[in-house]
Length: 438
Ligand SMILES: [Zn+2]
Image (cartoon, rainbow, N blue to C red; front, side):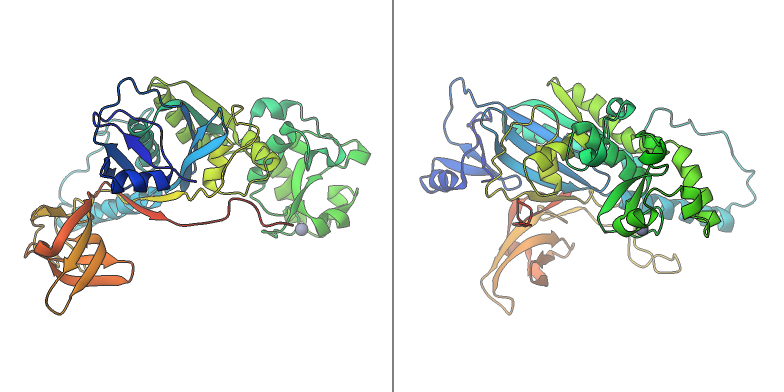
């Protein structure tokens, strides 16, 4: 079960506790709520020399979603899990929009100025802003968790596949379908290289098989440069025909296939760039960092019969993964990066003219847009209790986005702060930890 973090009164991390114990501590007045997300209690007493059990923070960084899981290596118990969605796309869109606005302004107002060029320092060794935000999101949460519990080691999935294991793939017959670790590395590589679709009919979302372009029977090798993806029917249809005979009717497809076969995986480096940057910055935190490959993660997950989710993938990263993982009743916290508002001074209409007055103060009566508030309205037409994100208005009557829609014009005197806006939104939802039985 997802556990609750506990700090002593000096904010030293203690062992996390089960929710039942947390409720008891709160009821008996021995602790108070320190943070709502992730749920953390602060005890009202000091603990001399706390010795909490060491936990391993495991990270599966993705381009859209990153899985974060805290595992007790000694017992194999998953203590806490989260899935964080990034805002890379959003950042890219915002920058494109800014570029368009600046270009348009130059065209309208300052065309007489001589063009400036070579007046920017090149971004050497830096990640692009959308990639940088992903790395920063993960680092923020690693630092947060280090303050709330005793993180003693970090595991990160660093590469999609281990190129070492690709060098001599020992795949024989059906071996690569449910066999060795290197088989998993090969599969991951081939799936990515051929874009998760059948090379002969482009079908997706069906079980795909590895196909030897030059068949084994005719001396084709097991090297990845001789492997492609085929759906079951194409694979059987092709059998051990030569690919040139099989695709006689489709010369274009044949040419494309042969070219793709020789090409190394083009964007593997780009895929791994963020992960490398993350690894380097995690190493600075002073904790031992273990890294694993995507193939190893998948192998660990399949061997433990766990479903494909981001947080379970994270739990299976690296060679340190305990032989049995206790994931019973874990509900991952869904974290979505939202950023901290925009710097735009006023809203525009669709023609680019100012639509609103200039921005007012960010903070109104102690509240800020994005804060989580609880409003208990005792009189008037809006009587009731509303919990949700607040949108502040300078006149002092706010909008609150609740689970059932937005309520408008709630006066600030009814509102109580539950959690400050911290650039993320949160949601906790149940889902199955085990794959549906076959
Ligand atoms: Zn096919």
